[in-house]
Length: 496
Image (cartoon, rainbow, N blue to C red; front, side, top):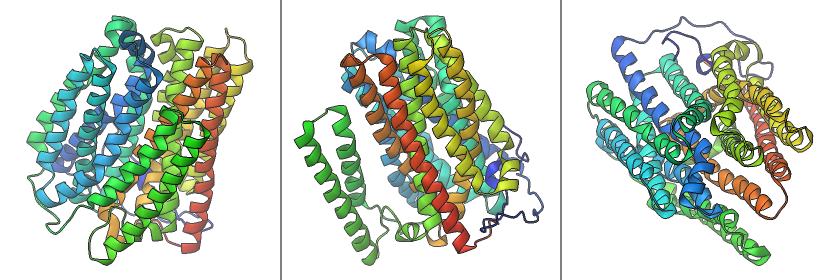
């Protein structure tokens, strides 16, 4: 982790006007000792919970063989975590508002750590699916308290920097997962190795628990009048499931039409309910002010498409390298390693790029990511097998650098455009949207790959198809980013 006074993308004070011209930088503030300890706890909690899913990606082929898991099981094992994570964020944040955050953080992390032991010892796919859902719920409860704690403890520039460090840590955890998982599988073998990847959570979790009990601020309820939009949460959960299920269990064209109709009805019901709940004086799940801020809404759409496509692309790449090319888990991890290195370097340097180019940094980074995904599929389809690992590693370097440039930068711009009356829930909504997008994208893209190979299409063709879809989703993020830039320019709102 960089020192507290190191520059990062989240605190780059670039002008967000249409011309993106630089403006004078204010004096840089420093974290005090208590602030550094709180930031350490939050970063450690984020790293522990966010590393989990990317480590698992490397282990999927091994656990599939050990548990004799079917494709639908694999999709739920991977996507269920993101789904439960996303759905726990809003109620977790509201509970923290009402009762104080410290002990909800501790409870969520204790649940996450304990259920990691259940995951590691599972002998049946259904048990592992249930454990992953509980792990995701615990992780969502933890992360909702971290976002709230950072907003409670820090103000102004320090808050932006703290949230930026949290975002960078999440990106690095995502990138480091495959190399870490590959090293564990190489050392212990596939049968035991995938179980040990779950046990990695335990020492990290216990250490973070000790730090949290000691250093997190005492519970201070910040919104005793806060309420929980239960119906809104249920409608979001139902809508997500309706979007996921056709990819987990293909229903045929009549079933697909039925699912599409159900999705439209649920979406309409959610919009109607949110407006009605707000009119009656309640606090709706999605604050109306957030949907009225075009830069916030479009930036959130960018984050959703980026997170979903990146997570799905990482999973499909791992399956292709191990199942299609026959690489060992360590070999697959080495192909992914350049992404982690490039992401770390790019994240550290992103602030300089932002100072020069402003919001266009997000668009450029997302464009690079989309091109890397599409090129990976084309290379995998046509290049000789002997060269493929080297070529894919090179493309992972481009992908990691692209995400490092735009990840925390986009988050900073999104949260900066959250209306003041919705500032407290803006971060939780952003994370919830990303996690739900990840659940749908992982279900869809892993389904595309697995069904293609099961149908005899071959691993290369399956990887090309999945990569093309990932690139298409990333292309939507590019479009949303361009529109967000224009919306910010029309608003002519300075960044600081």
